[in-house]
Image 1 (spheres, rainbow, N blue to C red):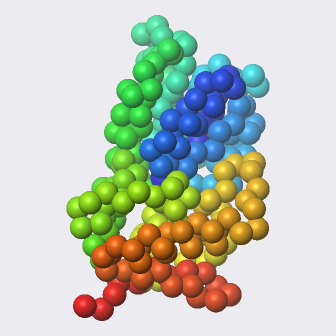
Image 2 (cartoon, rainbow, N blue to C red):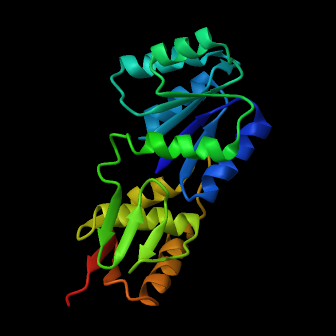
Length: 225
């Protein structure tokens, strides 16, 4: 899962990024309408988190423009505008849900999970390969019913490989997924994540193998029984 947060308050932005990373989702965080427009032009998102009071425009205009482009990605509004008529305006502009500041982070994550279940990119509630199950809403991974502990980058790589299980995934696609908006990956970040993920998969009865296709990318294949 990849989220876009549009919030100009640095402290709240950092707190929400930490909360999202804590459940294993990827998130790009920007602080202006212009940066948000650039982000949605560069990547596909499963959920948008939009503050309304932004330094270079109104979040409502951003939402309207997004909907005019026929984008169906769910949108959660995060704002201090808590009056009923203002909530109605946000929903009428194209938002799917609304949280007034200050809010509880547990409720925030629950609302995110609810909207992610509606995301057009979430074609199924869970991915399966061999004995692995990847819950797309919670980001948890289980092997034969037992939860598997994965670092965020390992989880991101596994999600993409499970979506394309049995097909080669190009290295460039995985590198793009691991990068967060505006950040550069170290030269061996992908290789390190794949190596650590492979060790964890090989150390359990997963029923899958993670193969390197030299010069191309990686392949998650179900083992023959």
